[in-house]
Length: 119
Image (tube, rainbow, N blue to C red; front, side):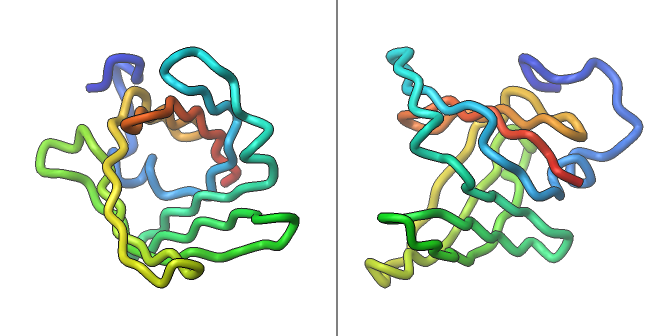
């Protein structure tokens, strides 16, 4: 169970995580709303543990690929991906606050992200 999650679900955590997510709201932990910086971004988790982040830099769409999985107790989504511009491998942990079929809320070290599912 997650702090803000459903009390009962008939779908597994994995089934709920697999989706194409859009950034509904993004805020810094200080409260500063930076959602506009994530306009048209896509965060996709598929059934084969593939990760796709589509993002924009100066109006140019960039696809970043990697993998995803849960940590052992499924309280975090662990991402490993390659930044195509920096040509570097990165890891990131997303602390799950809510995981519903159409809504995923996570904390990163700097941000709170509220995703909307499109599937």
